Amino acid sequence: MNSIKEKLKDSNYRITGQRAAILEVMMDNQGKHLSAEEVLYKAREKMPNIGMATVYRTLDKLASIEVLYKTMFDEGRYRYELCDEGMHQHHHIICPSCGNITEMEDDLLNSLEQKIESKGYEIIDHDLKFYAYCPECRNKE
Amino acid sequence: MNSIKEKLKDSNYRITGQRAAILEVMMDNQGKHLSAEEVLYKAREKMPNIGMATVYRTLDKLASIEVLYKTMFDEGRYRYELCDEGMHQHHHIICPSCGNITEMEDDLLNSLEQKIESKGYEIIDHDLKFYAYCPECRNKE
DNA sequence: AGGAAACTGATAATGATTATCAATAATAGT
DNA sequence: ACTATTATTGATAATCATTATCAGTTTCCT
Image 1 (cartoon, rainbow over the protein chains, first blue to last red):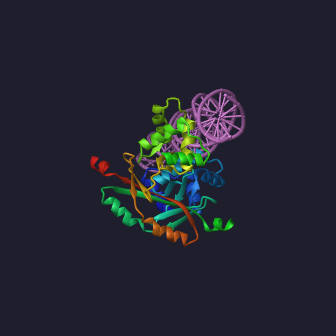
Image 2: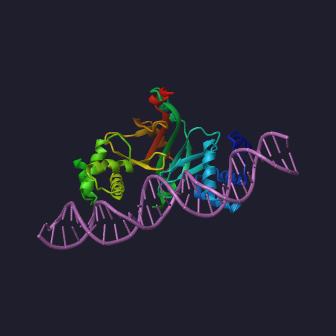
């Protein structure tokens, strides 16, 4: 939490009650992938008058300083998730039935990245998603 | 082209001038990833009165019968691309500078998919994207 | 040719996100 | 602590991509 505040200050961002509330929400929901709307409602439990524009602005700022990941899960809106310092490559498994998003760690992509870099590219990031019915949904049918 | 028309008929879809024009556009731009807006303008060169709703409807229908891929490239809108029968796993490399999208083929993910399936998931699809400066853009600086 | 059903274009509606702007609050320097 | 500077806020309007509506048109089967 303190290192996050340092990051904010380094970028000339101020630490406001609203930002603290949003950060709290993200920390309370570590490992989850929240939409801006979900963050708004959860943040209003802590600060009832917080506005939606503030939520969008804050989430984007936090993503720009790499405190949050901002990802589009093919449903037409972004979701935000707290960065996990320790985790290196983390991929997502999305269940088309219940919508649940599971994370998995694996360094398999390293060799592919080397291949791409050997062609002259400079890789910044990657994004790997699997669309797969989860064990729970498969059993329901 | 004929096999595509078969697919349309099998799904009770009619072959109209508009659909033929859109298919032509997609075939003229094989390997490219067009937004609905781009398809609209290109289709209007062949059929000036074609409406945007028709483009959206047709692209979605063609994606539903697996004639097109529909992918969201993290820019807030979908892009469409003609399916290539022969290609198995095809991934995308997106240059954040010029926006160009390159394709690559690689079957590396098979082993990861097996791992996921052994946990009880039923994989439907996957999506792997690399964000990387392309050789051309790297040289410009 | 005729008729059921699918399709079309124009337009309005939606949903997510972004821009605007006057009022407010956080920080640095005194 | 006080103040000036500047970032930030909430409300609202605007934007952008996409979807729904609907009356009129076209396709295609017989």
